[in-house]
Length: 81
Image 1 (cartoon, one colour):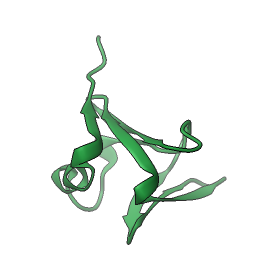
Image 2: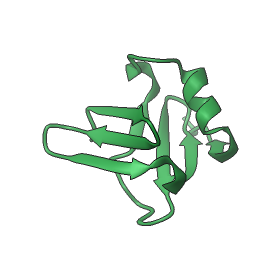
Image 3: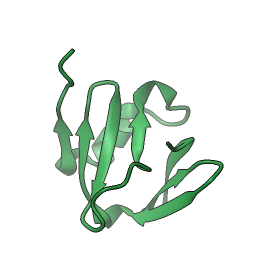
């Protein structure tokens, strides 16, 4: 799982102690809002566990800013409990 996910210019960067993956924002297919976290999906390859983002771990910026950047691609799906 990523330690940090950050937006930098026209890229999104997912990092941990063991990896660093950089993708273009234009490659984001959809951002799924799962309630407490986001899953960011890409056109190709579309599956990556490296782009999941827990909302309460956001340390810079605001969730509203993040959602504004991805508003056309944001899908809200709360998990059933």
